[in-house]
Length: 514
Ligand code: SF4
Ligand code: SF4
Image 1 (cartoon, rainbow, N blue to C red):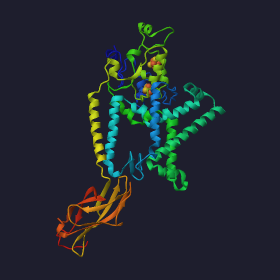
Image 2 (cartoon, rainbow, N blue to C red; image 1 turned 120 degrees about the vertical axis):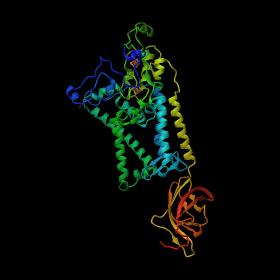
Image 3 (cartoon, helix red, strand yellow; image 1 turned 90 degrees about the vertical axis):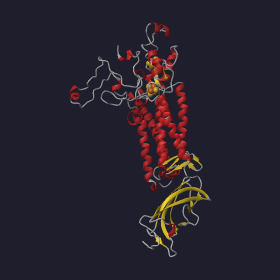
Image 4 (tube, helix red, strand yellow; image 1 turned 30 degrees about the vertical axis):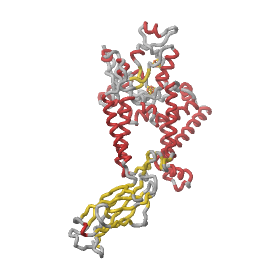
């Protein structure tokens, strides 16, 4: 009895299966393996190699069949919504600010219309933690649903570029035939058309990414101004477009398998209670083709399972795997195999769900989906992080002020005996309205004067950089440095309190001009 049989005839879903003794690794080159220069690969074991490479390491190009079915329709609707949000994101304004902006050049960021600055690094760090913990919780509960349903790479690949391919080249069989056909005028024309559309779409994607980085106004300037004034922007626009063209036209599913780290650490997150796209091995095995006049009952009585070995689930898989081998790193939970198998089950008059969303415990032991302690712990962490994030955002002051003594300067004794310090001031307006500002001393009597305009105003989403003079009576000083507390007011309303240090003579009666 194999280890799998001793567990009820089911292979483990998430881990590398132990190989039976009869299934020993095949050494590609015994000499090379002896020298340790080549990894031993068993080409009969799907876990030893990826589905998109052959024995020589060459790319196996995939021609997945167009998926059809209820899950695909749901996915198409969801993807349409995501694509709409993705492309409209840089153009939507909330109180004058972009819905989403990641302006790395000017170090200005906008999330849901809230302007963030590099000084908000704590908010960013917590937002990143919320994002990562959210994905972790989601993966523990629902596997790689993010990858197949919400990741921009999969959404664009499967719902836009793949659809264009089906439209121009036809379905899987037609695509294979076209690939094998000689280079006739018609093939050249179709290839040219497809790649021209691909490049056009990549241009749109590249421009959208640029708009997220530099803002929609800057993008429009690059597009419509004199190109000589925007050669840096035009260079990036071209690079982004070429990059997306390479990804969607050539690299495709390899991005998920080779580059994206998320697929790699999913195996550490999934457990027996995670819901994943899975084949019901107990119901499906022993698989065998369907014979004429064979019904589900007669198959059962002859010791056969419900899988008719039609391989439709493999034919539609955009990552080229056979889900009947168990959960694999390449699977993005796109649900195409569920639709394909359900279609076959309908045709053969059997109940659907041979491939479905289910946990290993459900498939092996018939247990219902449970909210496990692990999920609860991750959820508590996520909830706490969301709480911290909301607190940071909601308690964020509309203005952020830095008030620092000008480096190299000490103090100045005025003719009337008062001591003066020169400060450099920077105020960032994070609100949605221009802020007239005024600074007052809060803990000591004295005067504060901002240089420049009489009534300084900080424009929306920008900063004011100026100098300030603070004069204090010597009697107020507590030594060579005195702690000052300053209040930043706008129209009489206290926005923020800042602390700084005032420099004075060690003995306040000494009059020195450094
Ligand atoms: S195995 Fe099924 S769910 Fe996984 S990637 Fe392939 S088609 Fe999608
Ligand atoms: S589509 Fe269903 S019946 Fe056909 S091979 Fe896959 S699991 Fe078996």
